[in-house]
Length: 396
Image 1 (spheres, rainbow, N blue to C red):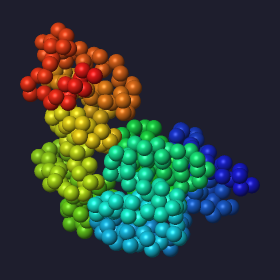
Image 2 (cartoon, rainbow, N blue to C red):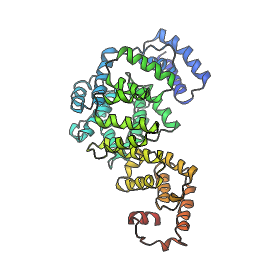
Image 3 (cartoon, helix red, strand yellow):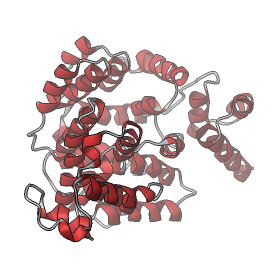
Image 4 (cartoon, one colour):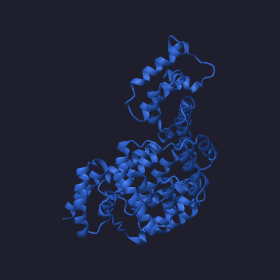
């Protein structure tokens, strides 16, 4: 009986995440309500709440309050308190990775190293991998593979499925293609307690249900209020919230950029350019690049991407490269066709993200030579005004 129930739950999770056809959703809605009357299980609750089928949001209130407290402390930027709360409760609920993530991010934000909290547990192994991924250090790619291996080994465990959404949101924070979103949703359906950041990955109907629940049950949550104000583009409300200035400015910049208020967005992005916080530094890079893409400043954008890759190749996965290249292919700006960074970027993209644009590598390589008056690559030499690293990479 238990095996059949777990199989049924997996099928529902799959349909909601990977195959959300109308007829499948209706089948899930009808059957899950029957199951909910017979079994009390957080996985069933997650399916109900994410399918829009008579949402119940039945969770362990005591445990949920502990989870929400840590998430709210992180949103407020109270990183020392996050560490204290986490170390007090993580042994009670080691499988709740939704509290492990803000703990690791708090360590990172404080400039500490995860090794200071070393122990022999599997949870520390996961935390160490997450630390490497979040900081984008030299072990980031190895840790990405390490997390993938853990997911494969423990695939039948709900916490392993949670790792899928954490992996996609933290390693590829700006590569949310359709496939990534499906894995994120699948992971969230396996969250053991309710995480308000679920809001970001569901459709409008489900978002409204989640907001309604949070307003009713957790109206004092700063995370709920912050996410609600972002969703409603309430810039005036965001400005007065008790959260770190860089976090406010980042989302205000996104709101202004979407509204066409380019100058206001630019000033806000610059306000956290010199932050000592590793996570905030990464946000600045991605936000500034998004600004350049949005304002069609192709040359600055491509120079920024390539320069960052040469300084830290692991940061490459943080940037919306695919979106940028697609825009370049549609707009075909003349200035960028003669920029040495374009063939370099296509090659880097092929090596690090996908192989679907490989034919552009040789095409952009030849275009660069022709548009700059070179008949053969050997004539390029050490051209004045071009970084030697770029010339060497171009020859390779």
